[in-house]
Amino acid sequence: MTDTHDTNAPPSESRRRFLIGSVVTGAAPLMVRGGEAEAADQPAAQAVREPVTVQLDVNGRTHRLDLDVRVTLLDALREEIGLTGAKKGCDHGQCGACTVLVDGRRELSCLTLAVAAQGRDIVTIEGLEGAGDELHPMKQAFIDHDAFQCGYCTPGQILSAVGCVREGHAGSADEIREYMSGNICRCAAYPNIVAAISDASRRMGG
Amino acid sequence: MQPFQYIRPASLAEMVMAEREARSRDAAARTAYIAGGTTLVDLMKLNVEQPDRVVDLNAIAPAFSAITLDGSTLRLGAFAKMAAVADHPAVIGGFPVIAESLSLAASAQLRNMASLGGNVLQRTRCAYYGDPAWTACNKRAPGSGCAARDGVNRQHAVLGVSDHCIASYPGDFAQALMALDATVILVGAEGTRSVPFASLHREPGDTPDAETTLRPGEVITEFVVDGGPWARRSRYLKIRDRQSYEFAVASVAVALDLVGDTVRDVRIALGGVATVPWRAYDAETMLRGRSLDEAAAADAAELAFASAVSHTHNAFKIPLGRSAIVRALLETAAMEVRRD
View (cartoon, rainbow over the protein chains, first blue to last red):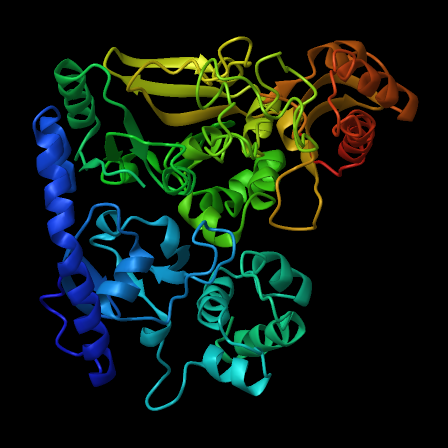
């Protein structure tokens, strides 16, 4: 379960990855023992427990990871690559906190198996950039309109909002509310979120 | 989530071959097909679904994702995404009930992920089915009983129920396909076949675990919908507990062919209230040839729920469903539709 190709992790992430690596290493013998115990009467069981090599294209970089086949794209981003911008809220596709852009469209990384996301262009909040040194207009609009309180849902809100504008569904406040209904904000910053998206939509030419 | 073997066939032929081979090796092995994954991954996390093999169909998907108008016939690739179909001009203009049923379903993210085929095969949101801590669920564990019958059953079905299961069918798009008499194209080990969409889902009866008439290993590749005046004058009314991103408490798909005020043809499909995508055939028969006013619509609505059976918390669905039918019929009759 190591990332063999990520050469640009910020220093603060190294310790995090070290800790994750240690935990996984500690757990590994248990998994192997489980596999051997079952191997006697269930020859197929061990095969499905072997890690698979998964190649993910995230924010313009390619990552090769050895993953359990059950790992979701969300967990691969957060726990393996160290991109913690995508948040785990409900982990069942109901809250939108894990929203990322996949091939330019907003999708839920918690309901996507990492192994099935290979070959697709994934953009997280960390990779959403503006022109030159500027923030992306949607990020700037969320700041300008104070469109968050605790901020936990914000990365998902912003990426979903970018998708909403690109899809052509940010034409009015009502349309924004309908097409952003997959992103829940427990602080209820909705009025300012709608104002920010409406503003950014104009700046993005949407 | 239980471990599984992951396979990604490059073609339908490879999929069929791999499935046949796996079946010959272990006839009891459970295979799950995955496209968008929005239902399957959720249910796997809940340990409701525990497939031995997950077959990823996304390498095959591009060949079955087209949305085409062939004369007046609409052909929808089963791997087309819900969002792509909901936003397609030919669908919005000629088959509004399809566009509405899709755009009122789920959330924008889910509509970007979910395929049409997976959408019609989505599983019930019965809370007892979705939580293995409840041991009694005939759908999840055949013969174990039904926790919903004496449990909290406000969301459950009143039409097509049995002593063994009252779980409601949760989808929206399926009702549009029912109302437009769609055909579904299936591919499996025995080749290609086409069946009426209305024959795809099975009422629970005494085998609620057998939800469809799909043969083992079969996959949906296409939906075929004939156009015409009833398709243009069609709409989807969805009643729910909150305004957006919620399953239907009751929903009505109507396709109507009117000559003046007289009903030449009508199809009515109901969602949120039934165990399967439901056609109100008796109500339709009663309306044909009649002039469509509120009284006629109310008579049809009465007939549509004549066989309804309610439980502790869901009796409200019967008057709600009737009102929804009346409103949907009158709103559909009032649509401005181009005739040609």
